[in-house]
Length: 113
Image (cartoon, rainbow, N blue to C red):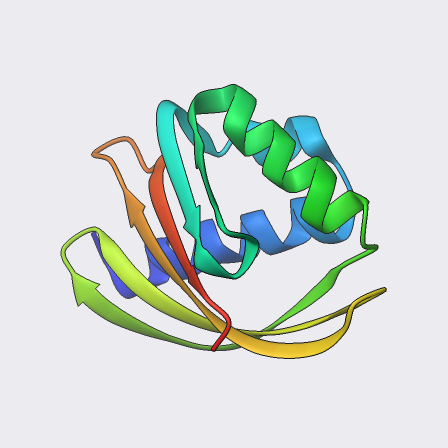
């Protein structure tokens, strides 16, 4: 996959979460996707986990994400640097995004440190 495809996936995820559109966000993830976010103390598995994560941390905190940069880290992997603002304040973080051969997100590793 090209960096342009990974950027498109990242842009779609950011657009869906900024719109607080849980269903649009879920459509970007494979059924067995995992979100690992140590800042929450939790790992979120499958569609129900992804739904919980988006509802709790994006909708619940009114999180707005702004794209900063992207670096390819593998054929279907990228590190996306983002700026988060919301009810929690302000954070700069990195989302490690991995997609399957169909372009669906299979894993997100969030690093807000």
